[in-house]
Length: 409
Ligand SMILES: Nc1nc2c(ncn2[C@@H]2O[C@H](COP(=O)(O)OP(=O)(O)O)[C@@H](O)[C@H]2O)c(=O)[nH]1
Ligand SMILES: [Mg+2]
Image 1 (cartoon, rainbow, N blue to C red):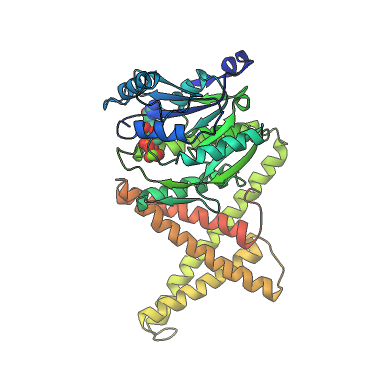
Image 2: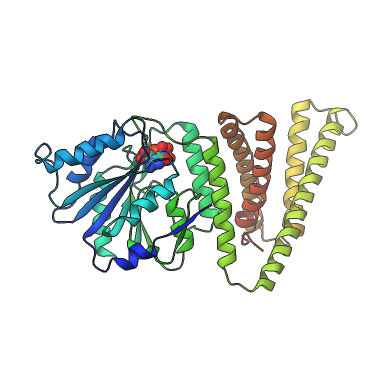
């Protein structure tokens, strides 16, 4: 793991030559890059000084050469009618593919802009939104502007189901696991910010999304504004998403989670007591779950074999489920979460929420198993991971939503 910081770049530049540096990492984007450069330039507001920096990792399809040629021709006459005169373009050729974060940090470290805007080269991030981002940067000098797919007006188009589910899942984990609830799209790859926000920050080059690192490490010091956009899946070329990337994501979230906890100078005694409370509630919740499992089995068997009744197996199963869900709810309400309030409306609302959360757990189990299987993970491991994720989410959802407690504590 290498840590990089940009302090030199930031403090050296007392006067910025450009208002914004648009940084675009590329790997095999030969079919997109020329159109993209043209479209970006036609979407820059008149009179705004901009530089575009392409960071190419020696793409085998010749993306780097295409950009070289484009820059030479731009200096000549070929693109004279299209290009914006206050825009310059440069390219950084890196010998090897050493990761997206290090490519972006390389780009930022050579940039001359007061602000930085980051976007992909595959038209997933529409160049038309750049104009709005730049005007937001002009309005607000200490704010990260995020292109957001998950606020009103934003959308995702044409993404295969598997990728869509992964994106929603990763977003959910980042927002709730890393306590970024006020940001709706912390996994966005399309965003802009004043360069000074990076001062004092170290980037983990093994990280996953540079925005996520900035949001966690600068949580209490910068504002965030999201503007909606429609994400379109790439038309040409291939996405880099594969199973190792999913593992990398999990690793990165874990590191950021630990970073967040370490940096919280909280009363450790209090933390300890909270962790004891959390663990004891989780233990009760799973004990109740186990009792429900036994009860469900016994009732269904006794109803179907004539001891308690002679139901058909479907009815026997249904009664078994209904009874065990109800006893699970009652035990969790009065014992696990120690909620003694028996107001009828509250009781019924909680009962409904409890059933809702359990159904959500089932859905999550299906989805996670489906995603893992589709990524090539064997069924036994997928099942184990799926059941674990589902039962943990079931506990956390009920804690948070049904019994209105903080997740931690
Ligand atoms: N420099 C560089 N760019 C990369 C690398 N991997 C992907 N990219 C670029 O990063 C952007 C996002 O990559 P993409 O494969 O579309 O990721 P996805 O949208 O998450 O599927 C695109 O502009 C890619 O060309 C890399 O290893 N190095
Ligand atoms: Mg893409």
